[in-house]
Length: 337
Image 1 (cartoon, helix red, strand yellow):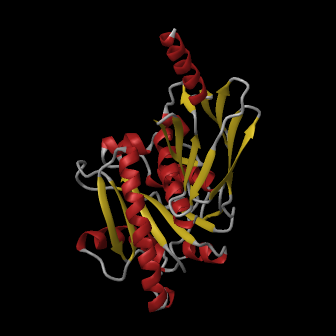
Image 2: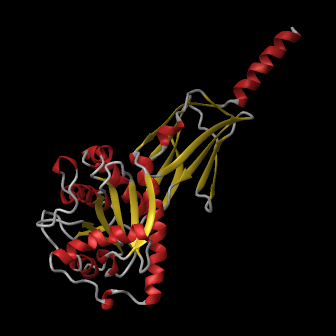
Image 3: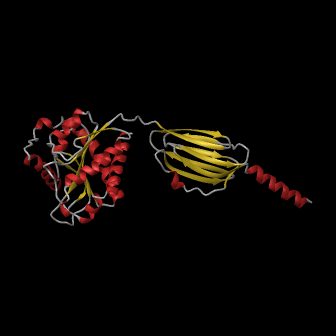
């Protein structure tokens, strides 16, 4: 009899201890739903660490009766999610992305966390400069691929990505020629907050490959100086004399913008190299005519070498062009928001 009472007591304690059973966890749009079985409303505690943007959601006296693939919950709202079972409770650690707020509440027997994007939309303007164009083909690679064609495609994908969160101005959106000095003027007239010039590299040796990002600098390494001289030569070739010192910003603004440009350039080249699988050639400062006239942070991105067959295959692929645009856009969002 005593054994029977002990067993019954144990079973009752088990039922009481695990008053709630989580049978499903799902993410749909901006809602994270924790689905409980049974008719009893689950107990919960919720805390938020604002500094680390971390929600701690705890369900005491609960158990998890489902497998949770934490990778499936990463999206524009959630950076990461971790589910932990401990001492008769289930805890959810939800790390939020930048500028995301939340509210959590019971809806029937389910607990729903709703995320909200509080980013100030389209507060900033980004200028996208597709290099070369029209009578200026830029570099010519394998199979007669023109730099002007490749970079316009990437620039259009970048425009589409950035338009979700920014005002966007393009120096050219078709195959037309624009002087180097006019390009930063277009951006300045639009009061752009950042200038991004998209280019493709070329070299005598077909072995040269990789992605690199340049920022404006009055001083440069011999290598960066050669690249800048090549790009600037197209302006000289087509009658654009843009070397006036009047175009160069004041010293204080120059240093401030250079510092911002360097930070953005470093993150962008690392992200592109990793996502696209290209060699990371780093960042370089050089006196690019197309950058020197802009009144703000600016970079020139060499997305790859059209003189290298491996790079060319990727940078002419719409799939990889979209990936490049997405990675650049992500860095722009991280910079401003």
